[in-house]
Amino acid sequence: MEWVEAISEAVRYIESHITEDITVNDVADHVNISPFYFQKGFSILCGYSIMEYVRNRRMALAGEELVASDITVMELAMKYGYDSPDSFTKAFSRFHGNTPLAVRKNKAMIKIFAPLKLTISLKGGYIMDYRIAKKETFTVLCASKKFSYEDAKREIPLFWQEHYSSGKASCQKEVNKFDSL
Image (cartoon, rainbow, N blue to C red; front, top):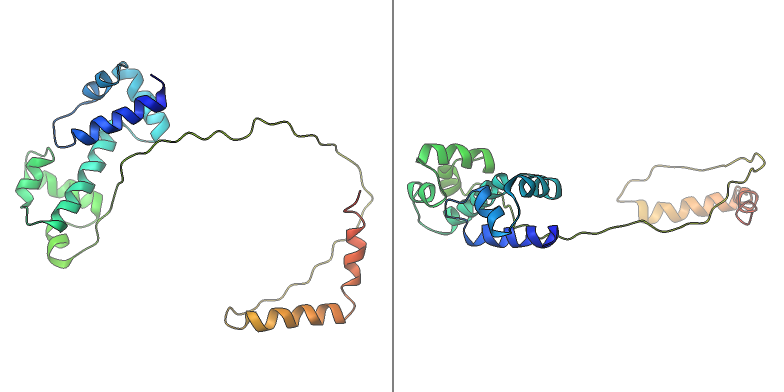
């Protein structure tokens, strides 16, 4: 099994067993890779450990469930693998930035942590022809002006009209001659 397939299968396994007591060994056994190598590969490709992923998903799901139902904090704590409501509340507060009570009573914001969807994209690996050429010295001129957002639609065309009518645009021809070299 390739790494992308292994991680995708591991994520499916984690998602289907999210409320159970799962370990790194359980996940690694499911994808037939040694726990040591799978944990290393997962953290390199995903940016966090398997158990960090599990904790983040559980907290996101707990937040969604807290908002969408009348479930008690005690029931949420037990459902998502915490021994006490206090330890759940501490973890919930660290993740969401608010206590479960504040979320429920004050309609405070919660965070989402979406399931992983792994895609690998390789870029580069192509040959490019180039050459370094020595050029004569030349001057580059520019014009700048600050515009307010509200007036930009009107002022920018006026700026360019003024620029071209003042004869400054003739400098553009000097610079363009180097484009064809």
